[in-house]
Each structure stands twice: as structure tokens, then as C-alpha cells.
Image (cartoon, rainbow over all chains, first blue to last red; front, side):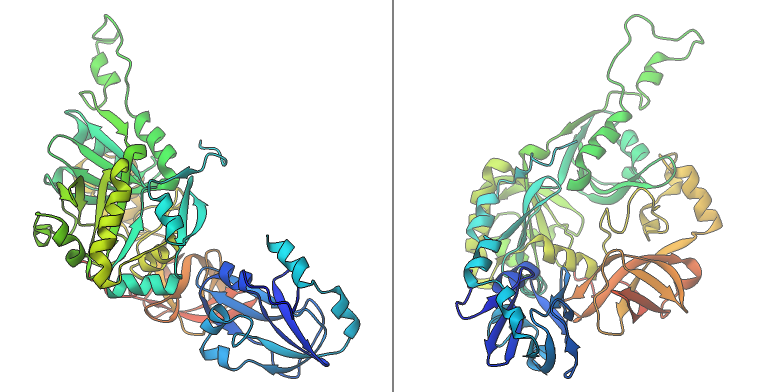
Amino acid sequence: MNIPDNLKYTKDHEWALIEGDTATIGITEYAQSELGDVVFIELPAVGTHVSKGDAIGTIEAVKTVADVYTPLSGEVVEINEAIKDASELVNKDPYGAGWIAKVKISDASEINNLLTPEDYKELIS
Amino acid sequence: MRKENEVKKTPFYNKHVEFGAKIVPFAGFFMPVQYSGIIEEHRRVRETVGVFDVTHMGEFIVKGLSSEKFLNTITINDVSKLAIGQVQYSAMCYPDGGIVDDLLVYRFKDHYMMVVNASNLDKDFDWVNKFLFKEIPVGETTDIFGNSIMEMFFPFGQIVEIENVSDETGLLAVQGPKSFEVLQPLTDIKLDDISFYHFVEGKIAGIDMVISRTGYTGEKGFELYHKAADSEYLWDEIFKAGKPFDIQPIGLGARDTLRLEMKYCLYGNDIDKTKNPLEAGLGWITKFDKGDFIGREPLLKIKETGVARRLIAFEMVDRGIPRHGYKMFADGDEIGTVTSGTQSPSLNKGIGLGYVAKEHSKIGTELEIESRGRFLKAKIVKPPFVHSKVS
């Protein structure tokens, strides 16, 4: 299972790529394989203020439905428009083209509470 | 009852592992839920051909002179109408008209075969055996009132024997528009001559089997009953023959989306002991004119007065996927619960089934489906969702 070294993770199977004060958020390889074929995704509105742990989106797969929780508090500054019409990107490239949203981090101290790649690897093993 | 820890493997288990299936326990078996992905597998069956391990289904052999009478008593369709080599879709009901299970009845030259749902196998076997009396009283031929003991102890007049052959029977379904082309080179039997809901006994890839023109997909295809010892070889031969057609194994996930597009009922979702065949849209297999059967009286009453609710098919108008247990509303009033729902890979929209009061069941009726706190528009449509291509 692919768990990139440069990301932080949550126990709910989201990842965050932290670059400066912005976090790009998505779901992990493990999450997409558990969900199966993603059919569509409800995304948050740009400008929404979210708190760590809030549901910022809903992923509808053929078999099941799951919420996406933001790993960090902040303001949604960008959403991945591409996955609205090409939801399969979340399955095919969960750490790349299948990213979900970008959040401007409001409380950098929360970053320390996220899981490291090693922690996450242990969680799903 | 089977315990949780006694999950069985079908004879195709190693194939599922080899083909990269995601495997889950289902109805007491480790079953493949998907291989490459539900949508791709679904399209494979609609476009060319796919192979399903359905060994988990239960098979009972029914033998004895009174088999027909016995089966006509415990099932709702008319077994006397079956020709040798024919298959019948039917159901068993409780005395109150609730459904025990839906099933297939096969008529062979000297016996019948019942094919029941895996999740109901033990329950069904107990149920059918309830109506057999195996202990013969010694000595007396009449009771103190002069009634024939034979008749009391053998309510069907003669001995009927029921044997559960599920453990030694492998079942592989080959479904899709190219299924004939895949299988024909493997057999001398002219597959085109087998009509829908008929079967022949013969060889495919040199293996003895029952070649049944049935399925749960709405596509042309066959279900192949064979000895479990031959399963792996059969799988390999079919996959070799199917290579030019991109043959693929299909998991339970796509089996569900394929059957739902046809509005085929799934026991445990759309039908169960609290539903009767008339409200489930199975009036066409409920034969009142065949004589008495278990559940006939209450069902006849319902037929005369009309059903109170109906299993309807609906499509989503708003984007959303209905799921089992979601509530259904009309004009703000709750009118029912979704029994099955999914995203239709053929239509690219949400589809579902559910029971609603008869006055809400008209085609075109607008509904709202409550999905995680939101009310999504849907409308009742005429089933099936996708045209059947079985014949």
C-alpha cells in the first residue's frame, strides 16, 4: 500500500500535504481501495471556515458512502474542480490528481497531532 | 445455525486470490466482492462476458413419487407446469403469506432440484424438512378414529426424500452477450437450442454438468452446476476460451448492480418474511388455481382486496445514491423505506427499490429520498431500469 513519506495522515484515512500555510487534503490509497469505485463527491464551498475533524465533503461510491474530515482547521481556499466530473481520479491517483481541497491553515499547532507515515502504516496494517 | 468462525471456502477460492479479488465473508462463505472494480465488472457483463462464482447458493435434490405434490405444496408457482428440462422461478411462503425464500425449481427426468439463497440455506432446509415425516409407526395402519396413519405421517401420500447437495456442488455463472461464443467451442451441445429457463445435462470442457440457461444479470448466459472437484479446471478452460472476449471474473458487488438494474429481488433486502409475493411484484409466480399451497389463503384474501403497498422502482432526479434503509417521502410525508439502492453503472444515476402505500405507487410519482439529512428528488419509473436481453 502506497503511503508517501512527505504527507501527514489521520486515523480516518485522510492525508495532508503541508506547504507553507496551506494544506492540500485528500484520501489515502487504503481509503479509496476500501470504498471501491467513487461515483461522485460533494465538495465544500471555497471560503468556508472549517475546524479540524469537520466533514468537508462526502464521497459516494457504488457500494457505500463516506465523509471526508479535514485534518486541520482553516479556510477552504481551493477545491479540486476536476474530480466533480472525473471522480475516478480519487481511485486512480488519490495522492495526486485525486486531491480534494486546499485549506489555509489557521492553527499550525494542530500539525503535530497528525499521524506520521509510520504511524499510519501501523494503523492500516 | 452456522457459526461466524465457520466461514467456508468455495472450490474457486484459490482462483479469487489468484485474480486479485477483495474477499469478504458472505452468507458463511469467503466470497469475492470485487476484482478490478464494480463499474468495470458491470460493464464487462453488459458488453461481453463475465464469470461469477455462485457456489454459495444451496441445492436440494427432491426425489420420490410425490415430489411434484410436495413441491406444489411448499412453493407458490405451479410445479405441474414444468416440463423435463425446464426451470421455474418460485418462492416459498409461510402460512401467513410472508416469504421464506425465493428459489429456482429444476425438473429432471426422475427428480427435482431446488436452488435456494445462500443466506437462507439452513433455514430453508429445516423448513422443507418440517413437512416430511420420516418415522413410520409400527403395526397400526389406522388410528382410533379409523384415519389412515399413512396419510397422517406421509401427507404427500408417498415418501419424498430431500438431500442437501450444496457442499459437493460447484456453481459458475457465465453471463453476457458473448457467453454463447465462449462456451460453444467447449461443448458438443448446441447451446442455441437451450431456451431461456431451460437446461440440459451434458459436458463442457469434458466435465459433466447441468447447463442451465438462467442468470441474475438480465444478459444471456448460463449457470453451470458441476462437481466441486472439477471447479478449478472448469474455471481455467472457460477463461482460456474467453480470452478473445476479455472475459473477467465478476464479484458480488457487480452482481448486485446488475440484478438491481433488472429489478430482480434480493432476499433480505427487497423480500423477507414480512413481505408477501403480491406486494413484491411476484404475483406472476403466485398460482392460485393450482390447488392448496402454504400461504394460499391469506394471499388469496390479499389478492381479492388488493395489496396495501407495492415494491416500486425509482430513479434519482437529483444527484445522489439511494441506499438500503433510506427513508422515502412524498409531499413531506414519510411513505416508505428504500430496500435496495445503488448507482446504476448503465444509466449513470442512482436507482432503487422500496415499498410504498398503493396510492403513492403510480409510475411518474415524485418522491424525495432522505440521504444523510438532505431530501433528494426521485421519481417512480416502470421497471426494469435497463432492458433485459436474456432472450
